[in-house]
Length: 511
Image (cartoon, rainbow, N blue to C red):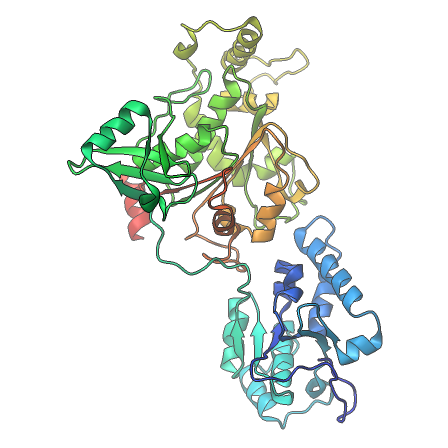
């Protein structure tokens, strides 16, 4: 659907049908999903030449996801449009639709007498802005060619401006999860009092195919009898529910015990401590315990005798995946510290500056190898001096906090998402906070880095999104939950009850 220079030029590949539409793509759609070109079925697809200019300006960003996606789009277009004729006339896509690059002849000829240009000049007179020129190109397509024209953009402001000049506009919907009512944090399953007693004594119970029909694998449920007696459980498939396997508390050596304070936190702790679950998605507003519980359970498993994980990796988006951390002074940890301060706060709570002897190991007989690991961890956490002779602190320097020793030892490490591509993260407990700020493609990039023996926990609040190109239905956290739901390696928990303080709970609900 490209345009030739003369007024009699024809578009040879244009499909005209009562069912066919013409979608004009904004730059941010291609950056969000380079494969979007193949996801518009048998409709016409038009790319304004201004989009190619914006992609050209972005392709030089070597260390960013945007730069990689821009280069990927260029390679796709080069393969689909190999010569000038293909650029001018458009090509057929494998999906049955067409792809064209559009040059707006109205701007070339400086025409201002068409209805579309009159509307545009009245509402958006500044055509030096790329967004306005892309809208102008979509208006040109709308006025020149028969199929209904829709501008597809992830920029809400561009959508509004397009509608103001009489152009239909919508978000890119391919990776949005289906619209649904507010998801409940858990499902209640009715049982008789005798069935509930049997579940309590045996640890599992077959609720039957009818009751399990609406449940997905690893979904957390609350069993309730007629006498209002309840018991939490997890659905394990084939109609079977099992009792949660959680200790009375979790703690790191020298730290304080952390207990689940409500039913939903019990669900979360069960998933965090289960070896068979390697991906956890957790929704929760501020103060519900996402950060504290995930960190506490990670440290419990890192420092216990099982040696399940070699360490804890923590990260969160700075602005978005791939944003360069350059121009900030200091080491990677110092650059990331402002965004990872919630985890410094959590570690400060979990491991106070004056650790006490850990009672949970006192009565246990462990192997000499495991005992040495435990003793070295305890010594590292409690010693005020550097753990190696080569390390030294200047006189008068503030004492090193216990969690800072964890960072220096490598048991807890800071991961920058900008540099995670190409890595293989083995035997680590990986926590990705604020995952709702990421796109589905970015979350996929992170999850595919997780090797055998590792666990990844995605936490965030889908109601608090600062990224202008994702929303409550298209962000990476919600997308990962929706696509992985029902898989044996995945569990999902929704936390709704705030436990930070009464004030924080009121603020989260009312403000």
